[in-house]
Length: 448
Image 1 (tube, rainbow, N blue to C red):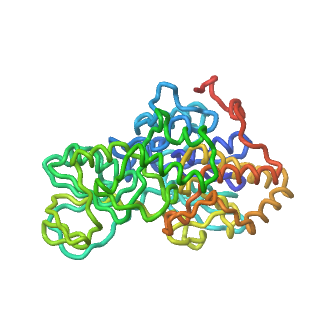
Image 2: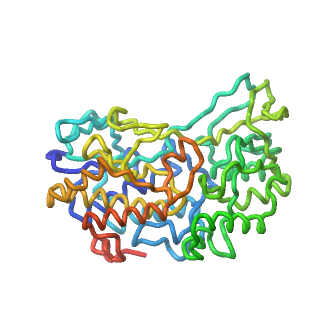
Image 3: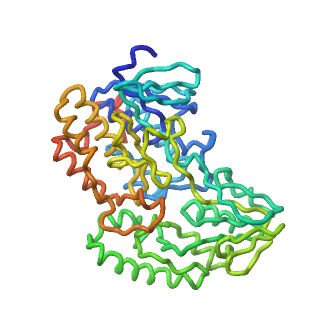
């Protein structure tokens, strides 16, 4: 590629990168897109090296709330689609809007450096290309977080990023460490396949069923009675107690936080397996002792495999840390996307949210595209937005006091976030997302 100094570089062709590409195409902003893998899909492609995906993985938000804006998932999909359907849907999105032809596959970006008012992007082949802006959209689940524990373990220790299918557990005594959504999924796989299954937890969680009254929980939350937070928390707590009973009876610790104050743990099967004794809850790991794992409550278990489902450290390895302001392992970005210190270096997809991730990607990437468009066509408005990037300090938690952890300090509430983005658009005079606004990009009338 030559003559790229007036173009935008998009790095990554997963959901966030594809959302960004569509937004730029709609406004006629010239861009190039790079993907180190051989196809689109990001983490949802099991053939993508380093993906954390596994065979039993499903969306934890429902079909109707989770798709790209203006491109709903097929009606034939179940409420919570599995990874193969999500991958097919994501690839269908790329095909429908003609995004694939603008992607250079099998091309890793190895370094991004500031160069005057623009940026220089170095590729894996050693070539260097100038761009006026760079959008990092390579995701947050590529660098496994592995804790250290005292002692020596004679069994096998792995991180969940290496896990693919339940057959790996057969004939083994398995300990899953961590009870996020992936940890809960994998614990259920172990419960159904291992000789013995245990899950180690440090704190209690509110376990939320995937359906309420036959409706996906997030759909119920969106379309059901809209209550103030101070009423919503106790009402839903009582509802969960009526539906599930006291989960401490099953060995789960009592939550040390109120409902909605941590990332939702949506899982029906975990409660089922706990009630049937297929998996047992253990305290936090204290140390290893040969084939045994010792826990902080003084108990121990002999285990063949310890699988850490302990999450991921966020990283943008191709961008030197000096270009992002990092706090608690998270880049501090205005509206989760805009770099406050270095103009035209963006991140899309760097957020923790309780619902509707793909749709939020679209809302965020649209603002990025509108701002980049204004730099060329309305510099005065672009300058006004730059003042907001520098000074605005929005509250995006919807009044929820999230758990005091690195993960939750970058958390946004989906409703509050959408509302604030709408107010930003209003202040800037930018058009919001509306049905049909992307129809002109559809190839051969494709759509859902």
